[in-house]
Structures are given as C-alpha cells and as structure tokens.
Length: 264
Image 1 (spheres, rainbow, N blue to C red):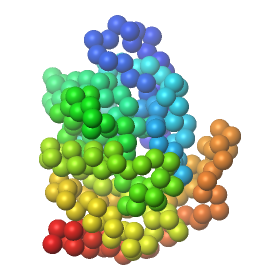
Image 2 (tube, one colour):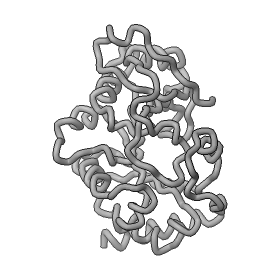
Image 3 (tube, rainbow, N blue to C red):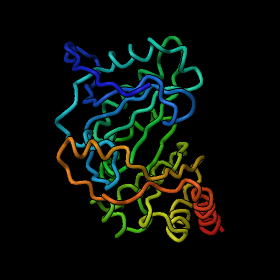
Image 4 (tube, rainbow, N blue to C red):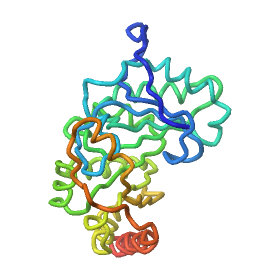
C-alpha cells in the first residue's frame, strides 16, 4: 500500500507523550523490517545523500504534528496484519526526534493486546555520542535497527552525503555494545559504491559489530528523480543509470569476504 500523508493532529497538544513531526505513513510495508510493517516516515533529515528518493522529508519545519495516540490508533486499525511484523520508524531521520520515538516505541511495547516489535530505520547521523542521555530511552525500546552505511571511505562519504561518517560509526558501535539486532543497508550506485574493493572495505568496517544479523545491498534506482524536479532541487546523479541487479550477489559476497577478513 502506498504512503499517505497524515494530517496534523488537532488535539496533539493534549497528548500525554512527546509530539512527532511526521511526513507520512504506510500501512502495509514489506521492505522495512521483518514481516508486514506499519511504517512511520518522520520529517527532517540532516543528510543530503545524492541518491535520496525522499528529498521532501529533508526540511525540519515541514510535515504534520502528530501524537503517539494517533499513530497507535492507526496501527490498531490493522493490527491483524502485523502479527509477524510490527512498527518501523523511518524518515527523514528519526533520531532527530528521540523523545517522540522513545514514547511511541514504549507505547507499542505496552499495548494491552500484546507487545509490538519495534524497528528503527536510521542513517545514525543524528546520534550524538557526547549526549548519550538523549538516546538512551529510544534505544532501550528498539528491538531492531536498519542502519544505512552510505560509503566505507570518509572522503567518499562526505562527497556522497555532505556529512562526515564519525557519528554514524559511533552509533553502530553503540548498537553493538547494547547487542541490538542490526541489519546493514548499503545502496549500490554505479561508479560510486559498486566496486568489490568498496564492498570489501564495508565488510571490514562493520566486522567488529557482532550484533549484525542481516545485510541488504540495495540497487540504485531513479524513481525519486521526479521529486527533485517538482521541488526545484538539482539532482546530483543525473545521467547515472540504475544499478544492474545481476551484480548484487557478487558484491554481497565481497562484503561478507571483508567481514571474514575483519574478524580473522
């Protein structure tokens, strides 16, 4: 089922929880964690990934103000579909709103009809290792993380995203310290992240994280280009063709090879 915008909650200020700034929701997500998921896309992102297919989520002052109660109600209206799934919060970047996500995940864990599996889809850049107290509550309530690693090389990371990777790596290390199940995601872009050398380096980078339970190599696509045209934003990867999916198995093996080397 397609994403849909959720309107500002007229009674959000009466909520017992922190209020979230939300871009949209998807009621039948199948690619954002195990099983069928209720997916919440938060508004605001500090990264500027060249291939981002949701540039409409970048602005931190856009979106709708939505209460935890409203999202719980949306979830409960389709609960029967989520028995083998749960809720995933994506973005944008959810960690820009740690108090809200902590309240939402806690409410899901405490549902009278049964505990709901929680999943955080994050690039990790909003995490601040100098202020662990801001993120402790949300990580306490997170069952799984989908962690996007954009590039294994710091210079390549800056070129691709406009940001340094230090905070992201610190976030990955904290997830490992806590033992939170983590799936690594990596977008394969022709001419940028599609070499076996890059993928092996990614494997060595994540090798120390023993909590990694999955690896998803995502082929670059151009389905979000029309959004850039609508928003009047130059698309930095104009002319780059979609990734050949037939190459993904070999690149996945390169990542796994790098992990084995890193753990030897």
